[in-house]
Length: 140
Length: 109
Ligand SMILES: Nc1ncnc2c1ncn2[C@@H]1O[C@H](COP(=O)(O)OP(=O)(O)OP(=O)(O)O)[C@@H](O)[C@H]1O
Ligand SMILES: [Mg+2]
Image 1 (spheres, chains in turn blue, green):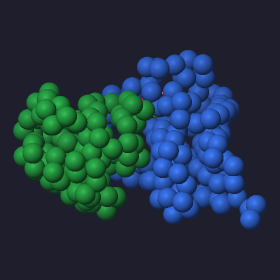
Image 2 (tube, each protein chain N blue to C red; image 1 turned 90 degrees about the vertical axis):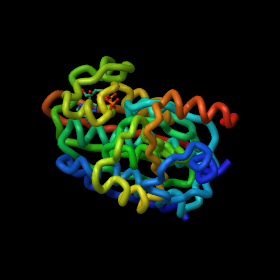
Image 3 (tube, chains in turn green, red; image 1 turned 135 degrees about the horizontal axis):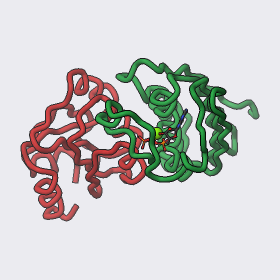
């Protein structure tokens, strides 16, 4: 059984009430597959932050989660505005979230740092006007 | 101590009592969601005044044992229903975050 288990999600950029739904579904699937709780928590946190960023900053996007025997890959792709300065965006506290989003509890500038902290590797490919592609890997 | 036992000790009101048998361990206080996501520990009691629908996904994914809404904050419509469905416990109380935390500390949590 070397085939990866593949999960695919469209992340809606309009609907704030269901934001995080893909991550919640992934958590459920990983549980059903018998993945260890610490791993599930890492994947859940890393993916949620990426999913929410696509909703808040990029008007939605797509998420693919691939579960291999030795690792879990989280692929996030959007066609949003892109990130002007990735090093700056990775710093704790940096946020461009508008006030209405901040009033919901977002905008602390901790999402990308959390993604880095809770994944074993993160690769961000982004450019202004081109959108953002992120690959996070969590080792099993 | 279970979530139900803790809620009884503190006289909290259950607005979503999805899984009262879950064990509680430790406490996290905070309203900024990505701080909670990154810093709360699995099993924690999460004390907050943030009551919009996004707390349900955060509570579930950060794997806290329950959410306690302080200062008489009432959750938005639909939050309780979604929380029940996702297995997330939510309580309300008139107490301040400090009072709740102090009472939890007195219970050696
Ligand atoms: N997918 C994306 N598309 C465009 N910009 C993004 C994207 N993800 C992040 N950013 C930019 O990077 C900044 C930092 O992101 P980060 O997730 O760390 O913080 P935040 O989303 O602003 O707040 P928080 O995650 O704490 O709620 C954002 O404010 C935004 O400017
Ligand atoms: Mg973010």
